[in-house]
Image 1 (cartoon, helix red, strand yellow):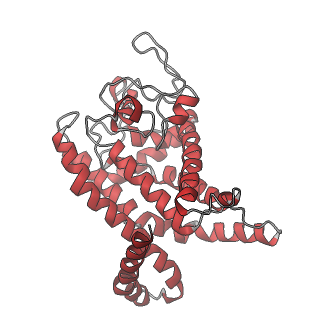
Image 2 (tube, rainbow, N blue to C red):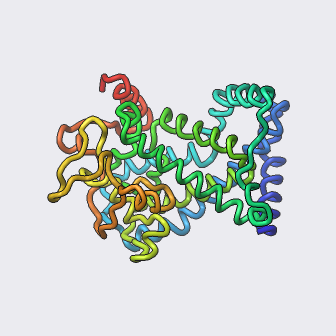
Image 3 (cartoon, rainbow, N blue to C red):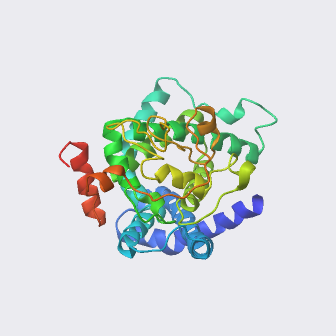
Length: 327
């Protein structure tokens, strides 16, 4: 792990000094160099992820696709979402809009006498190991992410935003970041609060986000792949997550409730909500391990012809209309 961390730090420093620092001085942001250095880390992580998408997951999609590619325009829009998020543009916006509020909130908490709690220090001698500490935080984040995902489907107002993610009929490795910006803002804000509450170090937080995002890109791939009877219950596969996106099987909005599909009634809100681990779906009865690959999308697209937009801005605008009951 040490040599990986050292190599990453060296490249991050080079990227900061070569690209970020000159740009920040040119824009009059020299007083934010520390934040710029952190941003260069996010940028590097995003570049690594995109390289893996293109070099590894892309060839896998072409090798064993679930369905032929028939709508490249909507995929190009998903690529734009991926670049906005993975290259740090969305986080830069969060920094200027949301971070001042977080800084004030956490400052008030510390002034009130509440110190930082570190979950990984509850078991001295064991959790001191970096890998063990990382694994603990990863599991905790995934547990919270599971319940946030349930809420995205179970709360009507949240589903009005999150449904954009499910409206992709041509799901590929680029589809993970296809989200309404308000949906991402809420989810990311809750995860930042969680990181502060349990004492996740900045480097660990970046690593958790990176591992989660890369795994989610694989899950959304147009790839006929499952991990076997045992592996399917250890880590979420493209097959497991595709069922979550399947029309009338994997997800239902809180507006319509459960429907009868092939003689059975799905759990309210759907199935397969796990982000990394299928354990929570197994524990709370929302798991579906059928080995099947169905069409993806939202029911009202098929039944009512509802429009979720084609381009980035039309999708964002229609999401706001749905949120306020006008779309």
